[in-house]
Image (tube, rainbow, N blue to C red; front, side, top):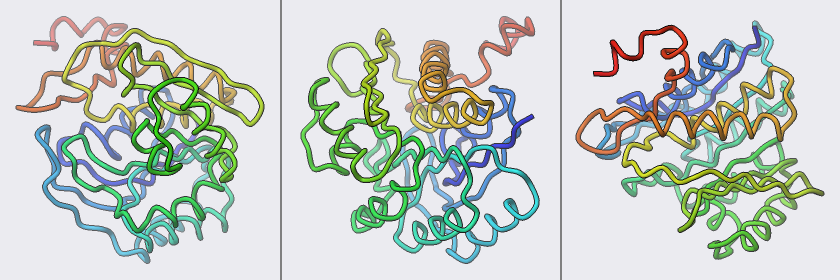
Length: 271
């Protein structure tokens, strides 16, 4: 079993952040580990507060993992402040793990700043060059590049710009497009587009965390980038299609739907 590490924030209601990452790692048949960067106060209705973890504690968590357990892939999620970014980058440069997947989480669906605006430059200069794959959605790609993105040509332009910043592979997620949810993958030479029908549901909490974690897990298992992205695209589409109507707001995706179905227990637990 491959070991996959998430470096991200904690989500109280379990739909995003390290909780979503660990569920995804398990669903993909890998062993999940975590380094917590922040503790958020949130539920399905929004994010109401955040406490960043001391950078030295973040470094200590990373040392504890890397000096003891082989790490086959790393997923990076919420990194809200400059000292956090520097702490993570320093340790990644020290241990040099393979298959670093960076999900540049910036703003929650409710509009809460999960990354301080002044931290953008540190993200670009310290973490993007360490990323084997980066997975921004359209608003995040716009912040990183300064470009307006609303169609496939502008997605390609953004992917090329981010690749020049040092990321080896760039996945621009098209969930915010008006038409079908089309993603664009660029490896420095080739463009691959991945299409899926748009699923009309409000329950999409944690989709970005889940997709990036699925990519990391499958890279750890030896899949190519394109294979890992395609598996993740199918996985998140299924998880959204069978999402959970939990809480009063934006409910989470269903990380274990396929496993529940194979086990023959979905019908008895879904209600």
